[in-house]
Image (cartoon, rainbow, N blue to C red; front, side):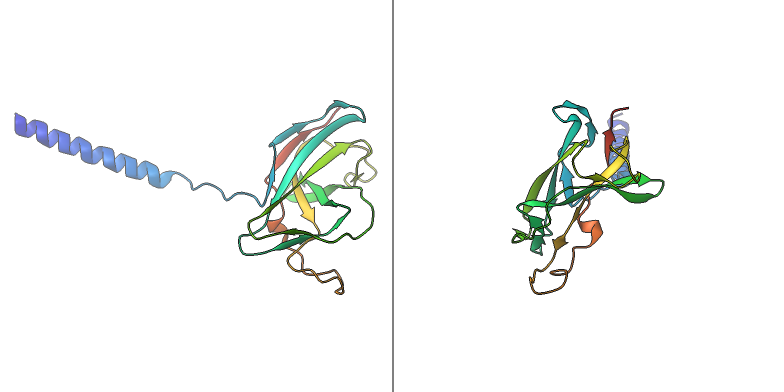
Length: 178
Protein backbone atom coordinates (compact mmCIF):
# COMPACT_ATOMS: atom_id res chain seq x y z
CA UNK A 1 0.00 0.00 0.00
CA UNK A 2 2.82 2.38 0.84
CA UNK A 3 4.53 1.56 -2.47
CA UNK A 4 1.37 2.41 -4.39
CA UNK A 5 1.04 5.71 -2.53
CA UNK A 6 4.68 6.57 -3.29
CA UNK A 7 4.28 5.70 -6.97
CA UNK A 8 1.13 7.83 -7.19
CA UNK A 9 2.88 10.76 -5.50
CA UNK A 10 5.81 10.52 -7.94
CA UNK A 11 3.47 10.33 -10.92
CA UNK A 12 1.45 13.33 -9.68
CA UNK A 13 4.63 15.32 -9.03
CA UNK A 14 5.95 14.55 -12.52
CA UNK A 15 2.62 15.52 -14.09
CA UNK A 16 2.46 18.81 -12.22
CA UNK A 17 6.01 19.69 -13.34
CA UNK A 18 5.09 18.87 -16.93
CA UNK A 19 2.00 21.11 -16.74
CA UNK A 20 4.08 23.95 -15.25
CA UNK A 21 6.70 23.56 -17.99
CA UNK A 22 4.05 23.49 -20.72
CA UNK A 23 2.27 26.52 -19.29
CA UNK A 24 5.51 28.48 -18.97
CA UNK A 25 6.54 27.71 -22.55
CA UNK A 26 3.15 28.82 -23.93
CA UNK A 27 3.21 32.25 -22.25
CA UNK A 28 4.21 35.02 -24.62
CA UNK A 29 7.26 37.09 -23.73
CA UNK A 30 6.52 40.66 -22.68
CA UNK A 31 6.51 43.09 -25.58
CA UNK A 32 9.48 45.47 -25.56
CA UNK A 33 8.64 48.90 -24.24
CA UNK A 34 7.97 51.57 -26.86
CA UNK A 35 10.71 54.22 -27.19
CA UNK A 36 8.15 56.88 -26.22
CA UNK A 37 6.07 56.39 -23.08
CA UNK A 38 2.82 58.26 -22.52
CA UNK A 39 1.35 58.96 -19.10
CA UNK A 40 -1.82 57.03 -20.02
CA UNK A 41 -3.09 54.75 -22.76
CA UNK A 42 -6.41 56.58 -23.19
CA UNK A 43 -7.36 60.27 -23.26
CA UNK A 44 -10.72 62.03 -23.20
CA UNK A 45 -11.19 65.68 -24.09
CA UNK A 46 -12.64 67.72 -21.21
CA UNK A 47 -13.90 71.31 -21.07
CA UNK A 48 -11.14 73.77 -20.25
CA UNK A 49 -10.33 77.48 -20.63
CA UNK A 50 -9.59 77.01 -24.36
CA UNK A 51 -12.65 74.79 -24.95
CA UNK A 52 -12.27 71.01 -25.32
CA UNK A 53 -8.75 70.01 -24.30
CA UNK A 54 -6.52 67.09 -23.37
CA UNK A 55 -2.90 66.84 -22.27
CA UNK A 56 -0.62 63.95 -23.15
CA UNK A 57 2.70 63.70 -21.32
CA UNK A 58 5.25 61.96 -23.54
CA UNK A 59 8.69 60.73 -22.51
CA UNK A 60 11.37 59.81 -25.05
CA UNK A 61 14.03 57.36 -23.89
CA UNK A 62 17.41 57.36 -25.63
CA UNK A 63 18.85 54.00 -26.67
CA UNK A 64 21.37 52.63 -24.14
CA UNK A 65 24.23 53.05 -26.61
CA UNK A 66 23.46 56.42 -28.17
CA UNK A 67 23.23 60.12 -27.31
CA UNK A 68 20.26 61.92 -28.86
CA UNK A 69 19.98 65.55 -29.94
CA UNK A 70 16.47 66.99 -30.06
CA UNK A 71 15.95 70.01 -32.31
CA UNK A 72 13.87 72.68 -30.59
CA UNK A 73 12.88 76.33 -30.42
CA UNK A 74 13.15 77.73 -26.91
CA UNK A 75 12.47 74.23 -25.53
CA UNK A 76 9.49 73.39 -27.78
CA UNK A 77 10.26 70.29 -29.82
CA UNK A 78 8.55 68.37 -32.62
CA UNK A 79 6.05 66.12 -30.89
CA UNK A 80 3.33 65.06 -33.32
CA UNK A 81 0.41 62.62 -33.48
CA UNK A 82 -0.30 59.99 -36.07
CA UNK A 83 -3.79 58.45 -36.38
CA UNK A 84 -4.32 54.82 -37.34
CA UNK A 85 -6.17 54.68 -40.67
CA UNK A 86 -6.70 51.06 -41.73
CA UNK A 87 -3.22 49.51 -41.67
CA UNK A 88 -1.37 52.81 -42.07
CA UNK A 89 -0.36 55.57 -39.65
CA UNK A 90 -1.19 59.06 -40.97
CA UNK A 91 0.16 62.32 -39.53
CA UNK A 92 -2.89 64.02 -38.05
CA UNK A 93 -1.62 66.75 -35.69
CA UNK A 94 1.60 68.74 -35.51
CA UNK A 95 2.67 71.10 -32.77
CA UNK A 96 2.53 74.83 -33.42
CA UNK A 97 5.86 76.41 -32.49
CA UNK A 98 8.13 79.27 -33.48
CA UNK A 99 10.70 78.71 -36.20
CA UNK A 100 13.94 79.27 -34.32
CA UNK A 101 16.85 76.95 -33.64
CA UNK A 102 17.93 76.77 -30.03
CA UNK A 103 20.87 74.58 -29.00
CA UNK A 104 19.73 70.94 -29.19
CA UNK A 105 18.33 69.20 -26.12
CA UNK A 106 20.95 66.54 -25.38
CA UNK A 107 19.67 63.23 -24.02
CA UNK A 108 22.50 60.94 -22.84
CA UNK A 109 22.46 57.18 -23.55
CA UNK A 110 19.60 55.61 -21.56
CA UNK A 111 18.42 59.08 -20.51
CA UNK A 112 14.94 60.54 -20.94
CA UNK A 113 13.30 63.77 -22.07
CA UNK A 114 9.67 64.57 -21.25
CA UNK A 115 7.32 67.03 -22.95
CA UNK A 116 3.60 67.74 -22.59
CA UNK A 117 1.34 67.76 -25.64
CA UNK A 118 -1.47 70.22 -24.98
CA UNK A 119 -4.34 69.59 -27.39
CA UNK A 120 -7.06 72.22 -27.79
CA UNK A 121 -8.86 74.02 -30.61
CA UNK A 122 -5.95 76.35 -31.45
CA UNK A 123 -2.92 74.27 -30.49
CA UNK A 124 -0.86 72.96 -33.33
CA UNK A 125 -2.32 72.12 -36.69
CA UNK A 126 -4.69 69.34 -37.66
CA UNK A 127 -3.31 67.81 -40.85
CA UNK A 128 -5.79 64.95 -41.21
CA UNK A 129 -8.50 65.46 -42.15
CA UNK A 130 -7.26 68.35 -44.26
CA UNK A 131 -8.82 71.57 -43.00
CA UNK A 132 -10.00 69.81 -39.84
CA UNK A 133 -10.51 71.92 -36.74
CA UNK A 134 -10.14 69.28 -34.06
CA UNK A 135 -8.70 65.84 -33.57
CA UNK A 136 -11.15 62.98 -34.21
CA UNK A 137 -11.74 60.06 -31.85
CA UNK A 138 -9.56 57.09 -32.68
CA UNK A 139 -6.27 55.28 -32.22
CA UNK A 140 -3.14 57.43 -32.26
CA UNK A 141 0.54 57.30 -31.46
CA UNK A 142 3.02 60.00 -30.49
CA UNK A 143 5.90 60.56 -32.93
CA UNK A 144 8.84 62.78 -32.06
CA UNK A 145 10.41 64.56 -35.04
CA UNK A 146 13.79 66.27 -35.16
CA UNK A 147 15.52 63.63 -33.02
CA UNK A 148 19.08 63.29 -34.27
CA UNK A 149 21.86 60.81 -33.52
CA UNK A 150 24.57 63.45 -34.10
CA UNK A 151 24.47 67.24 -34.32
CA UNK A 152 26.48 69.58 -36.53
CA UNK A 153 25.14 73.15 -36.86
CA UNK A 154 27.06 73.53 -40.16
CA UNK A 155 25.56 70.44 -41.78
CA UNK A 156 22.33 70.57 -43.79
CA UNK A 157 19.63 68.90 -41.66
CA UNK A 158 22.07 69.12 -38.73
CA UNK A 159 22.62 65.34 -38.63
CA UNK A 160 21.05 61.92 -39.16
CA UNK A 161 17.57 61.43 -37.72
CA UNK A 162 16.85 58.56 -35.36
CA UNK A 163 14.84 55.87 -37.24
CA UNK A 164 11.06 56.26 -36.94
CA UNK A 165 10.54 52.99 -35.05
CA UNK A 166 12.83 54.34 -32.31
CA UNK A 167 10.81 57.54 -31.77
CA UNK A 168 7.16 56.40 -31.56
CA UNK A 169 4.83 55.49 -28.71
CA UNK A 170 2.59 52.48 -28.30
CA UNK A 171 -0.93 53.10 -29.62
CA UNK A 172 -3.18 55.31 -27.48
CA UNK A 173 -6.87 56.15 -27.80
CA UNK A 174 -8.27 59.65 -27.90
CA UNK A 175 -11.95 60.42 -27.43
CA UNK A 176 -12.72 63.81 -28.91
CA UNK A 177 -15.87 65.87 -28.34
CA UNK A 178 -18.77 65.13 -30.72
